[in-house]
Image (cartoon, rainbow, N blue to C red; front, side, top):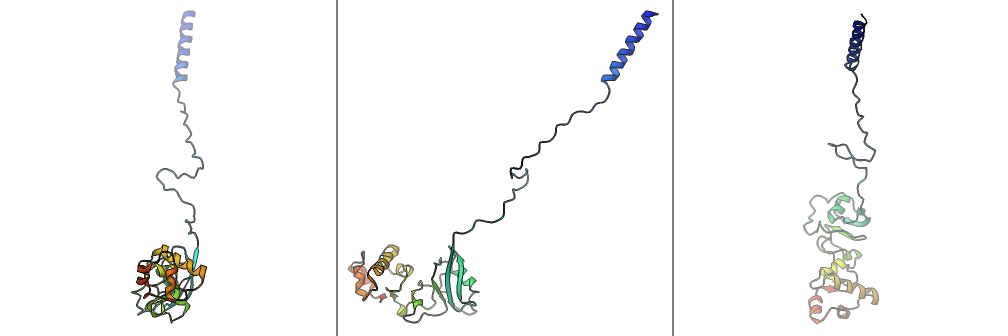
Length: 203
């Protein structure tokens, strides 16, 4: 009897052990790491940029006169073109011929752009860069050595920006040119170049 009881006890223990190990139990689930707040966009999404684009360096002010809807001073970002100045002035009036305007030229601070009109003789507007006054911006079609800008002098045949700057420097240092022949005093203007220019300039 004792042997049977011992066997029965062992069977019960074995059954209990089997029941214990075969019971259902939950598997641990690894927590998904939370991405740090680095500003990186989740995979599959484009990053959202902060507001505000890159701004330009500065601003220029030019005067637009003539046949435009709103003549006067206009403020433009640096690097703007003549076309931008006309748009800022409300656009050109209907029927105005702007074929002689260089709409792609970059404007400079303080310049005057004439649209559809001609600057009168001895008018300060004659100093506006050539090509920006329909019908001509210089009295008599000649460049005035005492009022011309770098752009106007640069437009003369055989001059270029370096020689144009020398002419401006000479005018600044020695005062206005008294005669066209004074152009010979500018470094870089010899007899040949003077002969090319003397009929194209005035004082």
